[in-house]
Length: 378
Image (cartoon, rainbow, N blue to C red; front, side):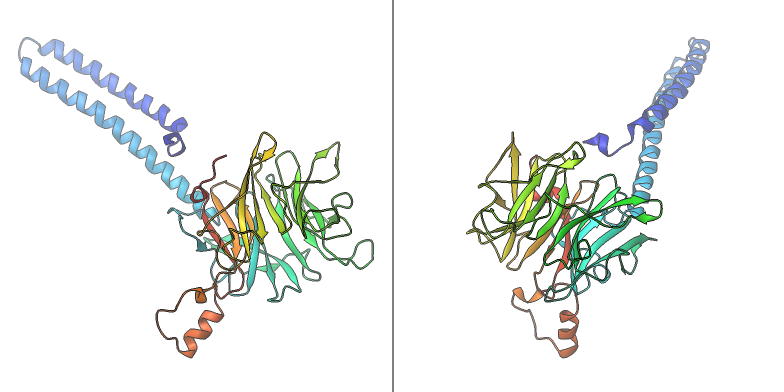
């Protein structure tokens, strides 16, 4: 693991330079030692000890300087990345408190690959309008969000950005071919020099007469999504569709191991398709209304889904599982509330209103934790 901490590609040349310097000092000492061998043997030993120590300490000094430079570079990268943390995050924290997670219903984060641009969803409390917002990470903090240029009129949600940053998928209730849409379809936009292209409805076979939700993609372009189309095993199921020859194949239901008579939707598929994290309601081991579950893809077969446990799931609902572009952090949405546990003391009116208008008030907030805290074993 040490190779991930230190830039040996830079350290090794510097160490070799230091070694050459020490070799020259050693050669000089040898000449001096030969000249003074007869006159003062103890002086020769003393000088050789000094040179040997200088050899050792020079190497240590150069190595420490390299580490300091590397740490400076890492800190600079963190300053430019809106989600990286200098300290481990082994317990859930509210992400972007007061700016991104505000006390409104904030959910469904999606980062551009460099981590400097964040798209997320802000909804009305009754979920009758969803709007995609965008914020920029500038001068060490997230900017005040703005309505994304492609959103603000219809219900838009579930943004997903491909690993190369060239496409953005989302769901929308906007009209299709000039006709009012009665459900939700998946759309895609291409990145251009002028910004995002006009949203394009993916059409059949991805979109159906039912509703589609939460598209996420693998590296090879396979799309996973939720849908309440006819023919499913429950009210809503998870599907996937392979992308080949420039088009999507007929979506396939993920089968009985994943889909049940209950509700399964909002699937996050790992880029290599090795594991799936999804939202589900109604299972006997659930902590709340909707929990997040993990299943592994073992040679084409899905393992029995495992509840992600009390760190991730609460007595409320959990939504929108996703992993940061650098693969180090897990993000999701939770409606957990400060009032789920007994209060330690009486609140006055000002304190009560502050709680009710802040994150963790029972509406949606975006949470972050180290991915390794989930114990995923690819």
